[in-house]
Length: 438
Image (cartoon, rainbow, N blue to C red):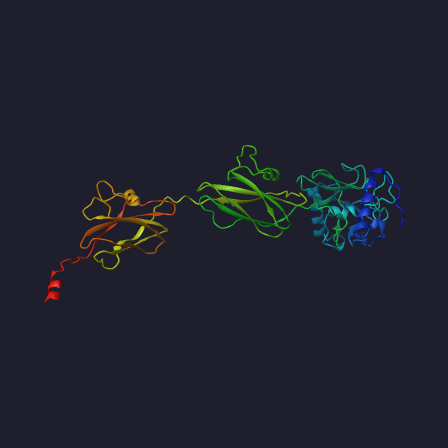
């Protein structure tokens, strides 16, 4: 293996890191330290190490010397313009291909070259990529855009500076060059730094219908990480990703609830909201970070509207009625309501003053009236319930009063009723005794 070249201090660190990493991982060295580039007849360059096919010139320059300006095609772009330049190249079937892209930071870094570098030259193979500009145009010497966003600050992206081979981060409005690439293998082994934020693959969506005070949210990301969320009024201004992560009041907006939860790769995670106000419109905002602290630059959201509070009491759809014929001491009463709840009843003498709904629910003596029996029963919606009376006095006329409450504690305003008269029972045993004594 050839000895390390003498390098300027600014680039020595990166050269040693790249060479050491390549040896430790048993992966191919960068192209400048292994097989040479191949310049193709169509103005492209093939890297034998990665199989990436590069445009020989930056966008906006052409010919074999890369010194001729391409008519109507600029040389300098902000980051959004750089991505758009790749789209335009594909639309035009540039050099016979329609799969051009802006290289990611790993790909663009792989063609930096330091073994022949001297100050004032580009850190790139000058035969393969002649006249690569490093001065006069850009904010930073030879700054060339990558497609990789800088996740901690959404307004920035990664930028390879070919003036001295460093990889830096700049605001997306900064002007830089663009060198397109196509085909090739993944360069993940060359640079182990994870700089890609997680992707939300499902959600953010409601998990079932909200109740008056609760709601469930489901969301899935493509890799392990942490999900951050906050809930605000639907009319509130949307938060930034950083504000979602912070989870506290922002601007003039009061946060209703916030939190975070661990998330596994490709596994739905559930956010449970409780203590909400009935009939209220909210919005939940979500942002994820992966285990390398890469944060999503876009905020996901979902509208959450709680159900209106139930203020309607149940309806008695089949009034209390005698079920069968009362015996001397028992009777059965059937009654039906339209929703689940609880039925309350009391039995009083038929001549007694009628009770109020509250007195039926209380089930005790009221206003001089002695209650014969009282109780309550669980009731299902639209299903007859049976009230069983026992221990009654034979031949007695009574009245049963009934009131229902639903599960939201809405109570019927007026009791319904049914007359209950037990069968007579003969207690004169004289005729029987006379027969026995005869």
